[in-house]
Image 1 (cartoon, rainbow, N blue to C red):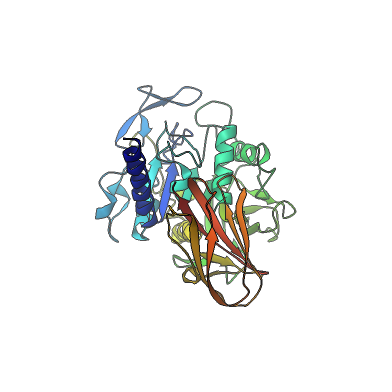
Image 2 (cartoon, rainbow, N blue to C red):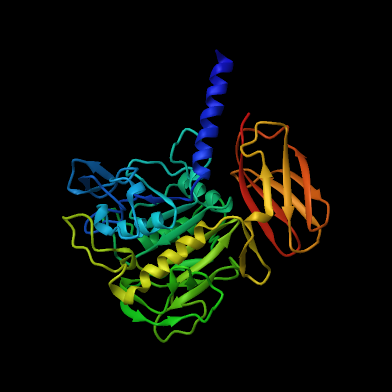
Amino acid sequence: MNNLKICISATAILFSLSLSAQSIKVLFDATKAETANNADWVIDADLHNLGYQGGPASVGGGNEANAQRVPNPPQSAVTASTNGTYWNGALSSWAIDCVNQGYTVETLPYNGQITYGISSNQQDLSHYNVFIVCEPNILFSSSEKTAILHFIQNGGGLFMISDHDNSDRNGDGSDSPHIWNDLMANNLVQTNPFGVTFDYTSFSQTSTNIASLPADSILHGSAGDVSEVLWASGTSMTLDPTKNATVKGVVFKTGAIADNTNVLFAHARFGNGKVVFIGDSSPCDDGTGDPNDQLYDGYVADAAGNHRKLLMNATIWLAATGHVTESSGITENISEDFEIYPNPSMGPSLRIKYSLKEASALTFQLVDVTGKIVVTSRLPSGLRGVEQLDITNVKTGLYECQIKTATRQISKRIAVVR
């Protein structure tokens, strides 16, 4: 009977991993009072029965949106002509664009748990590629901060959306810029890991102060070229490259010098993952959703449609896997040049097949969800090769496989099942 249970458990894990590998998965958070007061930062809600009395949501305490895990009607029926009213949420248009990009979207409901590497949580962040949190109004716990940072370190993408100072929607004393700064300043992993601080201010303006970065795929990606933004009571950011050398501002306040202050939109890398930052939630609002709220179409109608381009380009950048980071900072997609199999692995060894564009000393590492290196090995120098690595002592779990050269790093996820 025990052997049967183990077999069934392993099969279930393999099935789950197989499903998650079929598509980029994007998770929208709804655990941090994102629907309190006049906010409706969810992709779909079939019920409107939440209330916020100075803290977390309570069922039956009000008429705010209560988002469920899977949007309804099904995303399998979404087409290029589907609009934001297909789902009931102010982020529905953004989610529909994600589906049309080939992604799967879900919501982490108000009573969901933000974890990383916890197999008992069906919505553990390890099952997703991108985590989008739009204007959180409840502080992250210490364990949630650790989970989010480990998620990014191991290849995940985080979309951090703030709003203006004094935007406390649920009356608990904390608003989104303070909440994001608390996550970055007070965690058990690294102080200010992204090199970003949200400013405590509030302003409205249209800005065409876009950085001149022709190779930046957030400004000039497949969703289009970004030429302006409109802030409707938002905030700005101050960057500190001494904390994170990769942090870069790409949109700035009108009249500001394009440096590390007065930043409206920025991006950075952390570990094997990526983060983007925006100082206003208004660009995300598609004007549809909770009938009890007054919503505005900032996603398409404002800024001549540029918000849609900016948010989707950023989402695509966060979701991109199998990337190579050049020393110049330019990202090149060469996912076909690194294969690791079997994946998931139930045996004592892994095989690595690689085809690189330069011959140099290669280092392979297997990193667990806490960032600990559990296997390291030198690979023969060369452009191509197939190597077998011993993982006899590696326990069940999700891991990041890394190949490093002098100028680049390629990373992919793999599951080990014992």
